[in-house]
Length: 82
Image (cartoon, helix red, strand yellow):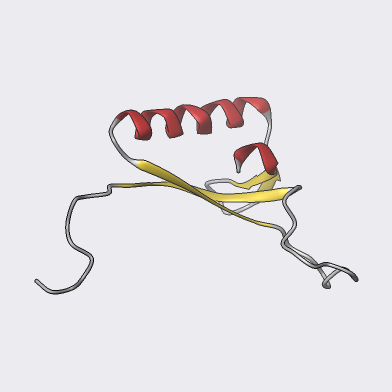
């Protein structure tokens, strides 16, 4: 996902270009989380003023990175039975 992003939301909440230094730091954070046994999930969007004509699926380029989170996946039951 990170490779498809050209911008990111910085710590002040502003959309800014995703330069190589920031990209390197985000990749380092992803690697650190993964080395701690976390699965990583990146959330990104692409904003449009209007839906482009002929759009049949979500765009996968020129995205804006919203965040990267680390998720601890346990061995618990998802059945809700106790």
